[in-house]
Image 1: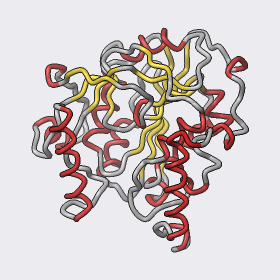
Image 2 (image 1 turned 120 degrees about the vertical axis):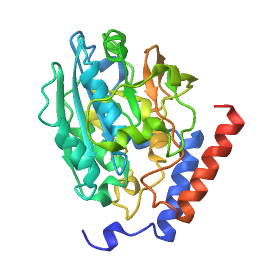
Image 3 (image 1 turned 90 degrees about the vertical axis):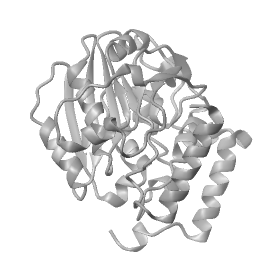
Length: 303
């Protein structure tokens, strides 16, 4: 990649992103920019066993990715087949070590699909999501984050919920979330020790409700993913970046589909909330600012 390809946004690109964010607020119908979107009535009405592709990105989050991977071993689905795609960078040694631990494991109904990519592509999450969307052979594809965990019964219940559906986008109407964890919380420290199978204590989680398909709970129909990709025509969101980029494309994806998603009931989807963001340089001004904002938001909403 050239330096130009991985540079920060120019002033013009920054203005373009501001325009996209304004458009995605509903000022302009997103479907005008998504001519490939199939008619909902033409979507495949998949019957069991459902195949689901789960897509996550990991950059210096190996302690959380460990719990997600462990959950697919400890609570492997019986009623569906899962392809677990993890995008990562070879420069992230802890994540490489973690994936190498899980790679040889044979788990019934689970297929590992670990894909290395340049960190500059990893830093713009829509690039990997678009790549997975266009290539998927699954009935449904779940775009998630590596701090989301699939505990007992989650995937098998999801399998029954997805059968016969023709919606563009669905999402769990609630998750079980931790409090905002500091970096020295035992849940985090234990996962950092070395790669191994681990389980989470559900008593540390409480219900958190959602009103739309936010970034880590976007479950798209496979036909839609193959036809439209993930913001594939918004070139701004397919540009490699020199550092982790704020994920405004999550909102743009819903805008392009013309829906906030259909809520469904799925138990035991867990969300590990944490104050320290490994993807930002620790101690930097942006890291400290984002951590402060997260703590204020958490205090305001009482979670």
